[in-house]
Amino acid sequence: MKNKINVMLVEDHPEYREAIELALGKEPAMALTRQFGTAERALRHLKDAKSDETPDVILLDLNLPGMNGLDAIPLFNSTVPTAKIIILTQSDKEADVLKAITRGASGYLLKSATLKQITEGIRNVNNGGASLDANVAQFILKTLKTKLPKAHTEQWLTEREMEVLTLLAEGYVKKEIADQLCISTTTVITHVAHIYEKLSVTNAPSAINKAYRMGIFTTEKEL
Image 1 (cartoon, rainbow, N blue to C red):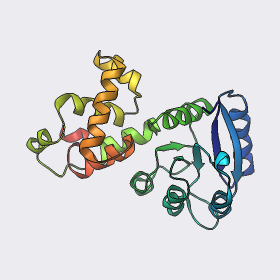
Image 2 (cartoon, one colour; image 1 turned 180 degrees about the horizontal axis):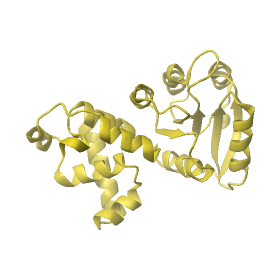
Image 3 (spheres, rainbow, N blue to C red; image 1 turned 60 degrees about the horizontal axis):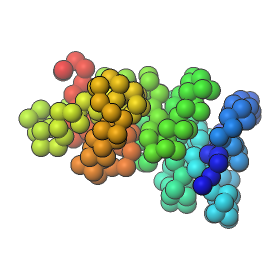
């Protein structure tokens, strides 16, 4: 069993790379093993890397010289399918958020996030969860439109599963959801597993995105 979460950083700004390096250096359970200024260099390294050099989590900027982060997501996923990708960017554009999630990112954090939030996000995705910036999660809830009548949602998710998915979309982690709903964390984990199975997804961002596209969620104005 690994003692540390191995993190790769793909970021072209030296000052920000240094800040991330210092933050992860203070985390005994994490190690920044590699950092690159372009996606191309990172991908070339991964193709030749040994198995013990494979990152657990990739922090990926979107605005990179050469290949941008959005185009790089599926390439990272095919090269190192076991690694989880967290987008770490200044962009809160709707198109960027939705493309990143649909292309396989497990998290989406803005660079305005604190270093503590970033390290917590790394832990969350490494443990099989997701990490969404709170502003991004609220933005998703408020802007995406419903596509199916409410009556159809019962064919997909139960009322409790809807409550769990809504809290996931608002940025809560499993323990916080358990506290909110006054149920055990184990029960929340079971509900999340059922949600993923019913929606044919593997993580929370994908579940949230698919729920909107299917019309399972409505916007705040329509509630």
